[in-house]
Length: 62
Image 1: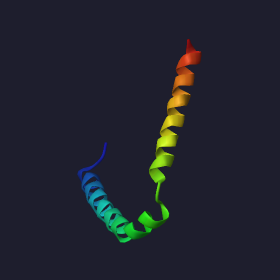
Image 2 (image 1 turned 180 degrees about the vertical axis):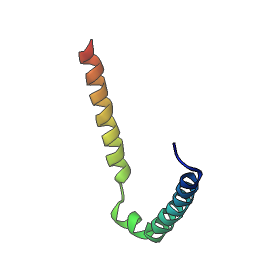
Image 3 (image 1 turned 60 degrees about the horizontal axis):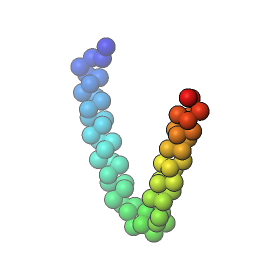
Image 4 (image 1 turned 90 degrees about the horizontal axis):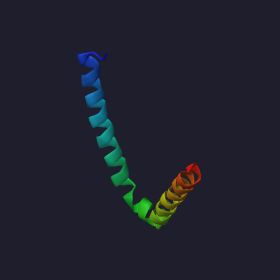
């Protein structure tokens, strides 16, 4: 389905993209700590909301 060259390109792209993302995150780490403090609460709330929707789906399916 894919040629060997496409797989090699995908591998190099993935490695380069990962390095660039890590570099960018490290560079902005101080800003993330300052402006995005407490984001884990939103993530937990979102997970609880998805869980409630799943429970509602299972409850009304019966």
